[in-house]
Length: 62
Image 1 (tube, one colour):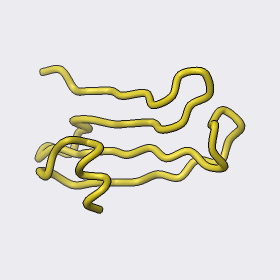
Image 2 (cartoon, rainbow, N blue to C red):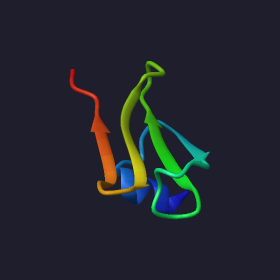
Image 3 (tube, rainbow, N blue to C red):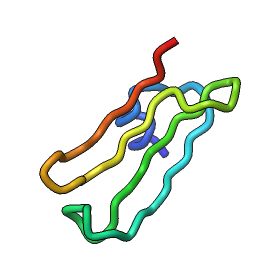
Image 4 (spheres, helix red, strand yellow):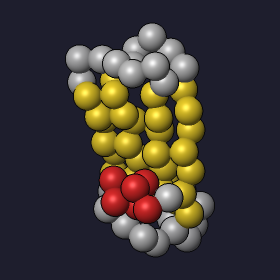
């Protein structure tokens, strides 16, 4: 859990880790790390180890 909080650069909100098994990942399994805000919407997400792209990061813009 601490590693996920460091990667998402926050300690607030709820955290989810989704394991994806697909060929688009450089590793055996891809991980989608999600940080949910108070309203239940995603504040930040990181899709790790995508082929040709590395880590894909998305941030909520208010």
